[in-house]
Length: 422
Image (cartoon, rainbow, N blue to C red; front, side):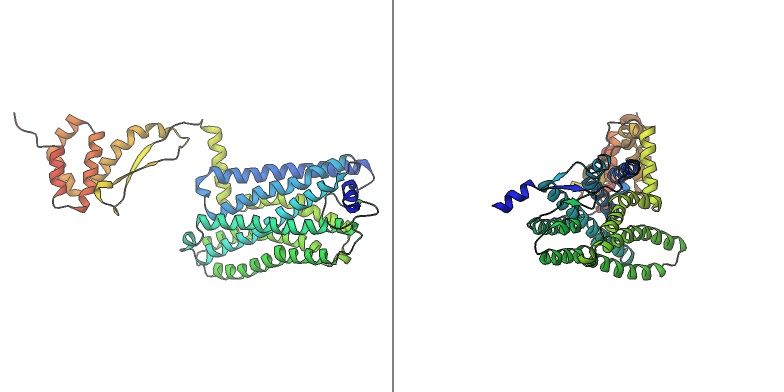
């Protein structure tokens, strides 16, 4: 009971970077710019992938998930850090607030690292098995992998946070950091921390060592597969796609490994605070820059979205098209599918263009139908027009492929009987 009352009264204070106010203000402006750049860059990537249908593939699905994770990840740390920079660390954080921040930091950071490993697997499948890529990386599998990264990160973060904040805290509660990180909080505990240190090591191995090892193995096979590509253009495109991901991986895993994959006794608070700036402020900004600058498809899609937003107003129209499948019987040939609205003037012609286009294409490409229609074309086009009746004719033309001996001539003669002499 006494321990519970003690923890309720605990408040943590963050140690400022410098006692000089001008230095603190400079760091505040720098962090603020990095944070705004992270929000804008990652939001742009996620919205571009969402808006551009050509990017609805597994690689960009994971990239959009990574961008959303980076937004929440940096927002877990940045606001409180900015406030403490302005106030010189005079605003404390409660015991529960510090535990909440640590939980979300470990949760989102773990999911981020696991997702980078999943992205390496996606690139491995795309380069090693290009013909079976869409069969292997199905939409359902991609959703399961992304959800699995979140679930695993949640479980690890919950266990680690509960273990650390069950320790008794005594003495001074000034954190030599700008957020509630695992190791600085652990140094403030006055109980036996061996179990917590072992848990930190296990979590670090799971979210850092294992994914990085899988990424390294994947890139060995990826580079071997790229070197087998004969065309220079294809080889350059594969290297460009993978190098952007590899750059992010080295930054993220390299900096995190310097902090968490070393004994707690050798932890240096000042060095830990400086290195933490890289993976909390710098990396979330570099991710969208690296992926957008080194990825031609994403740059083209972004330019397309920007141009369409500037040039064309939204057009609330959709065109109803009918597609024919040879795998089903003629009685169920038509299957309606709503086309995606396009912000182009050509969409205005779709209700008038498609009824004329479809019968013309089918008639021109079928010689037997062309010969038959020539005998009664004037009567057909003159008397009935080329809209709905043309589509009826096109239906019978396509259905005739199943029964060419009887269907074509009988049905077309019913549609356009020979013109009788008066």
